[in-house]
Length: 191
Image 1: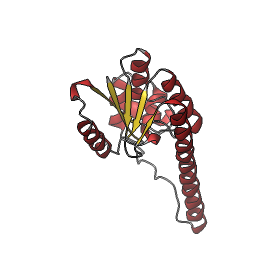
Image 2: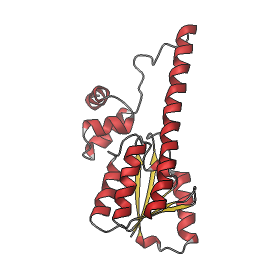
Image 3: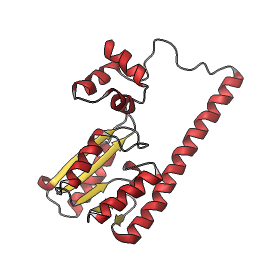
């Protein structure tokens, strides 16, 4: 069985372009759609605790998945340590990892080395983005134009929190999915 993994950082984003590119790769390589399992998360790549990713891990552990296809390597993880550990585990299990936009297949020692470099770059990109955001906030504060989020506005949709809760997700998992605090999730669930 082939696993196709897509991830966006928030529920507001879409995985359409990732899915389209993966479908093109599947068709070009002659794979049967009936032997494909899709795993799609709307969570940050800073953590491996994502519902669909956890399901993928279980399927790999159970031996039903032999190949994992993703759009970019940073869809799996944005943290070097997590990503390298993950890929090392998968390679030891004989899992083939295909990253279509970067045109690489990761298996064996060379694959792990290439993955380590690429995951390191993904982590650097994440840190640079956070630094740029913080610098922009500091400049806006000095100019007196940054006031933060206005009271009464929502960082995410409360309905989405309720939907995720009905699916059985825990409060901290919902907070990660929505990019909010646990306290905000509790407030959304009461609404």
